[in-house]
Structure formats: structure tokens, C-alpha cells
Length: 187
Image (cartoon, rainbow, N blue to C red):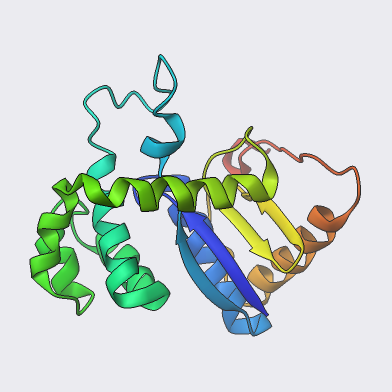
């Protein structure tokens, strides 16, 4: 099953969800298509940026990711995303090197010509679920949803069971949201 995963490279909860999806892919034969959902692009029309990015720094890693996606496809983008988390994500040359990608792409972070690609990719993801969401967005066939927002990565079959349950919930007509307390708060 092909699964599209829209992400912003700076969102820590999205990172955790991405690692869950990688785990689920190993036990449920999922093929992940890495996609971009730029929080900078999503929020650029707002008077007050909910991310607090008044200087526009979130554009830089998103532009770098756009350059990699356009030049090296979804799998190159996935490798860069992983490398950005394993290195100092703002050291673009290090992340590119770790991902096996040309370090010359680091200058793309300042190239505003990638902004339209980011806007279009962001809009594609958001259009799958509606304007009330952010990152991540996951789509599998006709089913698309925001999240899940998780704070721990389930491993092995636990990741597969969460995938199965999430698909059932997201495909249920009228289902909108499920929230709980963080696991650490349960007693």
C-alpha cells in the first residue's frame, strides 16, 4: 500500500509520527511517499504566526527539502529528513552529506524560487483533510488524516496495530478527532 506522508522538517511531533510510520511500514508492507507540508507556507497569510517564526526561519529547511525532493525524489527527501534529525538539522551540509546527497544543495535553503513548490505541496496535503490542520498529514488511498500526534514511537507489531486502528478510525464516516492524555500522565 502506498502511503503519502506530508511533513514539515522542523516539527518534533511530526518526527515521532514519521518514525512510527517507518516502523508500521516494516510490518504492514507500506511504501512511504515523503511529501512536504511547510508550516511557513501554511501560516504565511496569518497576522500572527502560531509557530512564532517572526523572522521566517522555517522557510530555510523547507526550501532545502523542496530542492532535494525535486532533484532526488521522495526517497531522497526521506533520507534527508532522517539525516536532518540525526545531525544538527540546521547544518544543512552535514545533513546532505549524511543522506548521500550533494552538499551543493545547501544553498537552496535561501532560494525563494522553491516557495511555490512548497505552497503547492502544502495545499495538496491540506486539501486532503481540510484547513484546520497542520503537520503531519497521512493519506492511504481515499483515506487521509492529520496525525496521529504521538509522543513515543511504537515498535514492531504495536506500530502495525496503531496503523490498522488509525485507518479504521480515519475511514469511519463522521469521525473527526481522538485525543488522550500523554502516557506519562496516566497513573
